[in-house]
Each structure stands twice: as structure tokens, then as C-alpha cells.
Image 1 (spheres, rainbow, N blue to C red):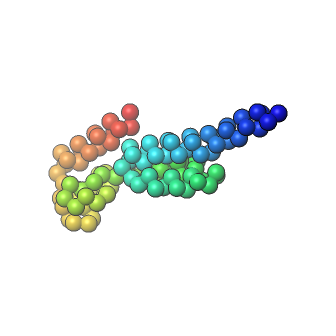
Image 2: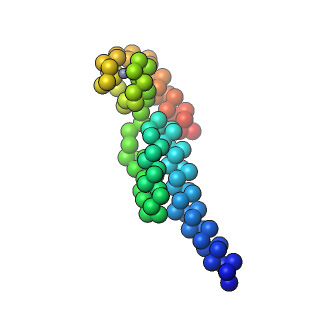
Image 3: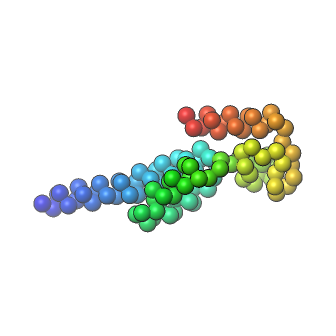
Length: 102
Ligand SMILES: [Zn+2]
């Protein structure tokens, strides 16, 4: 019954490491936030939590065109360099975010 044990082991790896880390990294990219969050996924119970936090608990980000820092998607003024963004630019970043979600 060694094969049975191996199958269970593989299923556990997929369920606790592969799936949450894969989707966590996907959503980190969509939201333009650091996928280092998924390092929590090394722990078998943290992977799904980190995934849910990224998907539901973290606001999407955009990159400031002037200083390249990550700021809130709907921000009008960059909190790092005070760069002002027009409503058009904001709408465009929101549209890009909606596109990435598909
Ligand atoms: Zn900036």
C-alpha cells in the first residue's frame, strides 16, 4: 500500500502548497502587489489564508508614473512624490485592473 500513501502525500502537497501559492501569485500580479506575501504559503495552513488575504483583503495597487512606487489604484496624488494624476489616468488604471481580472 505504499502507492496509496504516495498518492495521499501528493494530494496534500497540491491542496496545501501548489493551489494556494499558484492562485496567490496570480492575484498578486492582478492587484500589482508583492507576491512575497505567498512566502506565508510555506506553512501548510498559511497558504490558503495568504491567498484569501491577497484576493479579498488587499487593495489593488498601481505604479506611480513618476517615482515608480506602488500606490492605491484610485489615488489622485502619489503619497511618495506628490505626483498628481488626471481622472483619465485613474480611469485607465482601473480599466487595466478590470482587464487583468478576466
Ligand atoms: Zn510618485
